Length: 77
Image (cartoon, rainbow, N blue to C red; front, side, top):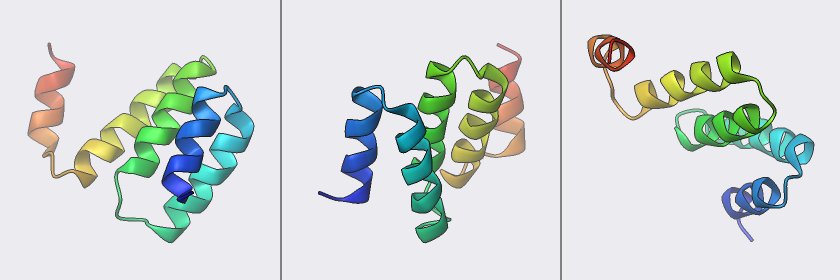
């Protein structure tokens, strides 16, 4: 099972601490991938850490190529 798949299974199983640890390892291995931020977003959101979740969402959007202007436009909606 790939690290990516393992993290998804951990999140689905509500094993958030383990998912967070695996996600941080994933980000170290693949720092340019936006999927690490997606995983952290989900873990933080499930743990009531909305501010941290949104921060990870924006970082992931930038890795997907979103500009500051497009991110700001989304915040203004």
